[in-house]
Image 1 (cartoon, rainbow, N blue to C red):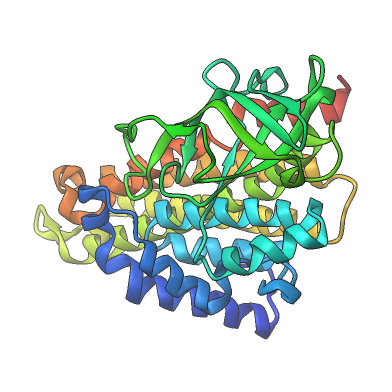
Image 2 (tube, rainbow, N blue to C red):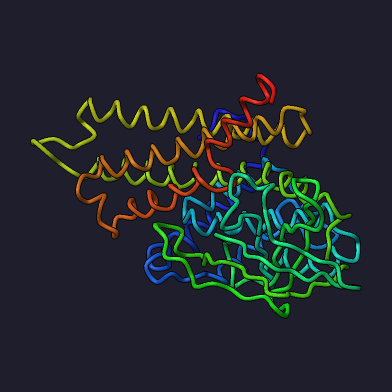
Length: 380
């Protein structure tokens, strides 16, 4: 259900992704989480349906869809597993950056494989010493003939060690945002290595590692655009990425709410089904209302992005903050309504809570989202 009016073609896209999630993702999500399994083949099945390059242009194998279409897709996939949907969204964001800022040679070299997910892409901005303060990144790229020589470390990189291409923000110039450029680094580049897979609260179905550059040589031809626009590229990618991760929160929370309604129809206490207690009815009513409000706002922000609204960056930040906070709150309330059973892994609720918690941190913390909104309202 949504109060945002969708045309038939977008409903068809959403329903296709929702059916795929129900059939190919949801039945395996708990096992993938427990075994820390990265579901490469299932993601390639999703790519065969057009989900590997959702908003990449169609001349290189992309689907050429809108950001609202993408939000519908990632929300639907997240009803099966927020972790898997989130990784596909990051892969899409990285591919879009190549499609938007890359040369024709770069687009044709990399994007067909990325859209089919024969190749996997990761986004590498965060460092051990720079998270929210992204413009302070230290990873250096020194020009040496036809190559750059990279030194530094990236932190919390989704897909690291399992990916084929890394869209990396590096310092080619002086301090600040204007000294940052973007390089596409192959996974087998000499001097590239990875830290151990991080032990995480959630998001276990995708690897997260440090990406380490030790005199790593990358051709100058792998740079996206001219030197000095890397921070602009990174921030442009994150506007859409924030919509995507908000959509993943909505999908995970909707799955938690649906599980809760089913549980309340079956579970009895004090001689009545749980869904017969008015106090509990009010709680699920609030969960559904808050989820619908966040969903409607996120769809509106995605539509603003698609029409290049001048307020799109602010709206994307608002939507990300609202959707991820709401998604986690709804999932956490779903766990509470399950009582002790919600704390057991077999019911699937605690996994959703663990997975959604990080959405309030990544793609820009929700504190940074508030900062973006405040600056747009009252100036820097």
